[in-house]
Amino acid sequence: MADKPVVLAEKRLLDVMLRELPAWLGHRGFRPLRAIRRGYDLYLNKYIYVKKGGIGGITMAVAAYVAVSYVFCYEHIKEHDMQRKYH
Picture 1 (cartoon, one colour):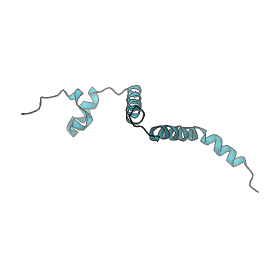
Picture 2: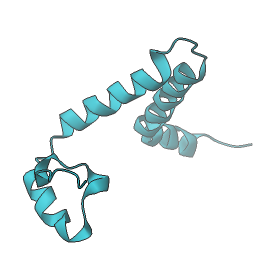
Picture 3: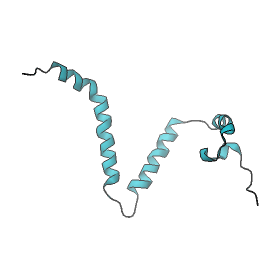
Picture 4: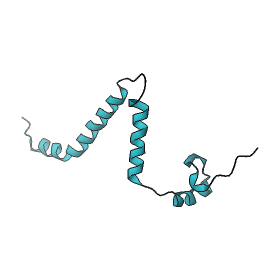
């Protein structure tokens, strides 16, 4: 038995043929906030809301915080490093 035909807009990205990709992208509206929220929910479900959790999810969040903080403070750190005298 063949599968029932699915509307193009309801297909997942992995189920879309290459020739259908432009039409599929046109039907799907890209909403950045929805994408961020979905990624955050996936992270919570995979690493935080588990029966036997470890320290991996929290460590990943702290590492991301450190990396983002460094990126935002890079210019300030670079400026202070250039003004420092080495003897």
